[in-house]
Amino acid sequence: MEEVLRAEHLSKQFPGVLAVDDVSFTLNKGEILALVGENGAGKSTLSLILSGIHKPDSGTIYLEGKPVSFNAPVDAIRAGIAIVFQELSLVGSLSVAENIFANRQPVGAVGTIRWDELYRQTQEFLSRFNLHLNPRQLVKHLSMGQQQILEILKAISINPKVLILDEPTSSLTESEAGYLFENIRKLQKQGMSFIYITHKLSEVFQIADRVMVMRDGKHVGTRAVSEVTENDLISMMVGRQITSLYGDAKKNQGDEYFRVQDFTQPGAFENISFGLKRGEILGFFGLIGAGRSELARAIVGLYPKQSGRVFLEGREIFIRNPRDAIQHGIAYLTEDRKGDGLFLNMTIRENLVAPSLPVFTRARGLLDFRSIEAFAQKAARDYDIVTPSLAKKVSNLSGGNQQKCLIAMWMGINPRVILFDEPTRGVDVGARAEIYHKLRELSQSGVGIVMISSDLPELIGMCDRILVMHQGRITGELSREEFSEEWIMTYAAGLQTQVSLEVNHG
Image 1: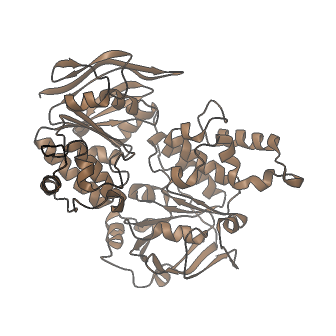
Image 2 (image 1 turned 90 degrees about the vertical axis):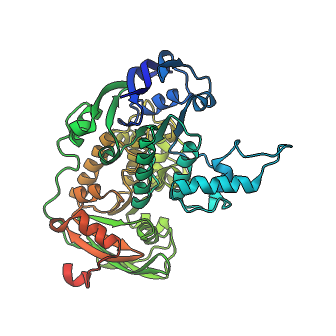
Image 3 (image 1 turned 180 degrees about the vertical axis):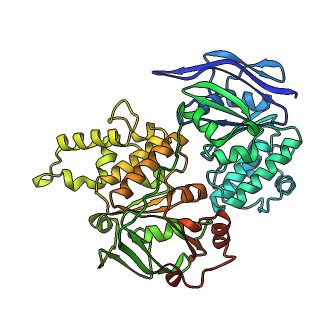
């Protein structure tokens, strides 16, 4: 095949870390190369070098056989290399058209924008990809999934030779991801090449031709996707064999001790009732808009409800706000750890004790800093939070370590019930295994866990039961023996509804 990009002996060092260590690889014209590795493996730094954001300390990049050197991202774009980051760069107050053709708008003789021409070009461009958006619509009014698709199309609009996609499906629904894959394959046939960075190994087998694995800044190996299994990739990524990613399910749960009854909030969820047993891991699945997160937030007083009751140990409890939930030992771990879950500009130590500060408060409101330090040190050890110091800001941690910090901070309240929303979003496979292991430990100690996830293999691997929601209602309930991706998706799409969940499963 014709080679479009080649890197030879690229290295990049930052204070205290060799982020990219003598990496060489090739990318062929019209090829999709998946790039995988744990957080901190060097994937992002390598992509930043290729896109002109960082200059390598050593090594050479060849584009179509010629050596190239970039002083800024604009140099890489002009040469034909574009990148789409997980964090969006769109301007919400501008229209779809203005975002796609930013700094490239058609202008008249005196430099004024020809708006009719801009909207016409945008409409033609969107039609190429069967995307039904109004070119005049402000981007801030689009869904997160639509914005992610638009970000990718913006990069495609400059017709790059190589497009680097960093976790492109992290904000997409199942159908939006399918739409993206369809258009990637269309562009692939036209000769565009892709470097596809993902934590979702299932996507590697859906979309990629070859897969390149990095670990500790080094290029571990590149394989044809047809020649490897998911376990092969996991072993290459973590440098060890993970024999059971999800761990062993506990055979027997205790009695039901937590119950949510008749929760309703018009437009979000309706007549939701379920019970949770001691030591049980109960999964919630649904497509975007099913109401899962709104329900969990309503249980802990973060979202309004019109009606609904909560029972713990057979007694009704009243939760008006998150403080009430904490006092009853009910923890909610948000899906948005950066926006809602962690105090990014505070230290790891401060985050670890945040929900349980009253425990460390002496008379007259003074904090017991010795106890805080002892607790934080133990939590960091127990949850294997990798950091040189607890005085570091949480924002400096990798995604996996941030997620482990989120879990550790809520364990300080000694929870009796855990509501965990998207527990491994944006987390590499090694950290996933550690998180699953901790959840297993908690369930085996008698803590009931409600796991809300869009990752079906995760729910099937971890849960004892799965409840499926569609448009705010529970449409199906399956025990472990009944787990089937086909059945779960059937209930999630609203194509079938169990007549009586309480009768079917008691």
